Length: 145
Image 1 (cartoon, rainbow, N blue to C red):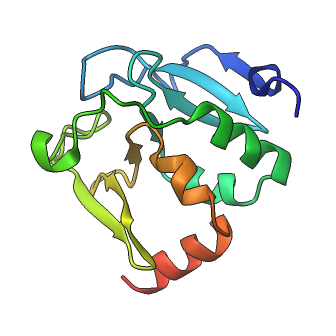
Image 2 (cartoon, rainbow, N blue to C red):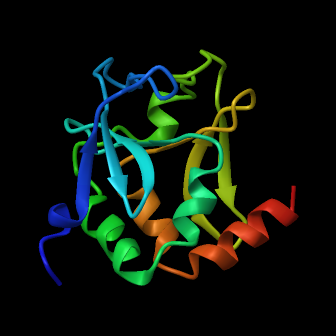
């Protein structure tokens, strides 16, 4: 596989898609375009923010882009476990985020904003979600609410 970063374009923030501040460290997250889907990723922690609908858009990407996500979203050893850090606030709305657990794999957890629908993934969590059929997992998770 070619270098995953060669398939990613950096995008400048805009009025419609402003800078996202990582709630874990207060740093601005970089905007990346992966196959036409714009995501926000913290270069320090590897955390990823997806606005409402972007998780579904990622599910529809071609397999090579899913491989790019798995390549750039690597679990970091210095991550603070979710149970230790507690709940975090949404970088978009400031609302206390909900912790969502994949019903088919309880080891996969991520944070969801109850107001804007955005999702926050610690390093490695989005890749873990994509290991299996991304589209199938999303369908199952949304139908069990």
